Image (cartoon, rainbow, N blue to C red):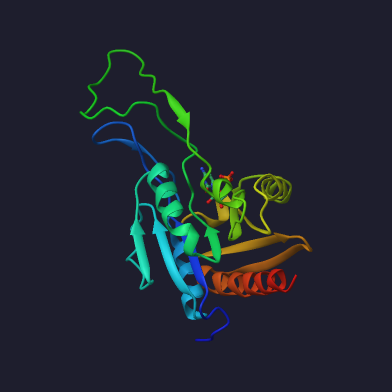
Length: 219
Ligand code: C5P
């Protein structure tokens, strides 16, 4: 299913979890599989876009994008995004970025403590918000996985991060699954994409992004 709606457009996608090291062998991560982000990258390619995929650690084969940049931590992901951002038209932030990292990473393997162990966590930068609040941001699309009050929480995030489009899904349905239901929130309100395979959802999403992006250019 090839078409050329996004021909000549440069699209940056982040995908997967990030991994925040605790010591030489341990770390903090989350259950994101990377499937949705990789599907979005594939759908954008099918529509003729030039795609850069920045991915945290996943078990997926690297897709045939124009540029694949593997990263580990949120900090590394931010730096990779900042290096690419000046060349892109559309940024789709699908990655499940860890909200915190360990304050001081131990280079050796930590020894078992006799009692309790406390690890100090400090907040990671919000990669999407760093980009979406630039003076001249690319067209930014965010994702929100929520376990409750999906639409309300997603709408708050869209406002806070100043996003023309936010894609909401229920965490318990989406994570690791091959299918999901998506709710698209934009200036016109909400659009439901009923449950389907992630690649199909990604294709529907990319069509919606194309519409919004073109309308924005006309204004
Ligand atoms: O605030 P929350 O993590 O739910 O927001 C989700 C959206 O923000 C996603 O698009 C995610 O990729 C992005 N995000 C980010 N950097 C963070 C946290 C979230 O880019 N540190």
